[in-house]
Length: 263
Image 1 (cartoon, rainbow, N blue to C red):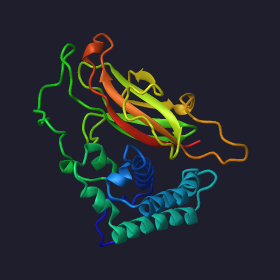
Image 2: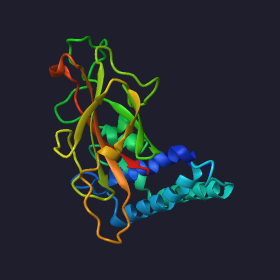
Image 3: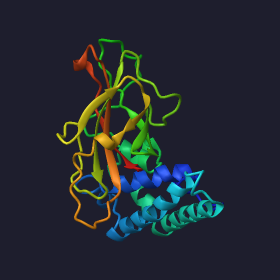
Image 4: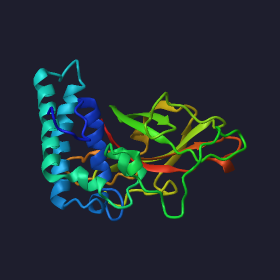
């Protein structure tokens, strides 16, 4: 793969995050994001097929005591090569890059420069200010890193910048990371687009770096017909920085963010 430029990670763990995150994101929204990006239904199906090939192999890869072999690692590398080749031929990420009104979440999902995002109409760039105290509201958004770790758990790290640099921590004067979350089957239409959706469970953490068991947020999963294989599960998250003593000064919600759930 030397000599090519791509936004697609070549590292196995980084690619896992990328393919899971992009597949989930493509089917969100109304119209769905893949339509907004100018992807065809065939493009979406091909991208999802790569994920379906990837998932069972990756589960073996991370099982170092049982399923891991050099052959599994090589198979994963070959899938990465195939995805890069598909992108170079079909220019699907270039289509994302050329989308009008690109958002910060679009950019972070597809590893595009944040500078490509367009501010919402009527908004102005926010000037740099000192960290907020306990009585001043914040415009800081939450930039989460979500990593599925098996057993329905998700590792959550919350950052103050799009680069997710430094250590995960809360802004000065904010003692809580508030989150709204629910689990849905993969491909479910009409997933939440705002934190006020009644299907979401609202909770908080006093830490910006923690593990969350998502198995208790599955009340939205429908009953499957007998003999039907269970689809992949997807957790939908929204986050904001919050103040336990000054709830009227909580920060703005950011999201939705999605992550695949590994059993």
